[in-house]
Image (cartoon, rainbow, N blue to C red; front, top):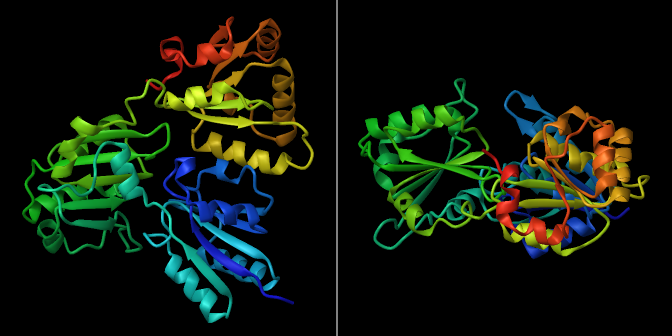
Length: 379
């Protein structure tokens, strides 16, 4: 039997359009996709592969690392095309070296397809280039957590504090106090600008700017959490001049749009800064497991805060899908519900849902007028 191949693919930082052309092609050709938590679930919507979720959160691992590696070998040795899909770039804190070594040791063919790393992407999506003539000619990327007993970054702080112009910490919010304290203790100016970017390149991206002396209290006050990157350096000053992504009228809005149509409303709200997820929930047979996984991931990571219903048939199929899928309907009740037409409104009310607004005009027009949907933005 012909042996398969493992493709280690970088999914990019979050924005669905930031995956490489080659990476997207391999997703569409794959027999098996083993994917991480920080992979955007909507990338998997049009794939035919068997999906294996191996997301990791602190103290909560869906699959242990050794189990992930076993899955890679099992499917490749069955002659299948396996995509190991990782958030960002697999070679930047993505453990691709360990997994590639495993394949090499077991004579399994593999390829590594780079991706856009979250450090540079989150920076520029918040208006901060990591290098800039006259401000920064060097960059260091540092993991914000390690496998040491206390979990704190294992860093040569003295060298780091004076060696480079810009430092990017990945997943370091939990140890933000240690980072700020150690950098200032080892010679960095306490007024050095700092930027935290949470969920970078997603529509719900949010940024917090401060200095080494203020950022810890600021982050605690607003509840900044991982996934996030922390950027330290004078390049942060550029944000006031070239910030662009978070300034869009619908930034922070995540819309689930049950629809079988491809219409102008999708491009209209995307251009205003919202994330919109069009899903057809009919037919309900073969796609049930895949759609359930995608919608579950969107809900659990809070990518959705709005549900848009413009057609009664789409509405009926969506509620049937919720009933069949086992998704907890209570998780959706906190969303803002926007509907069009009396039938859809009455159906929502029969399920105990009060619509945030009812669109009387053409939904394409209304959804593209920012001031008319201000009530669905994050506060």
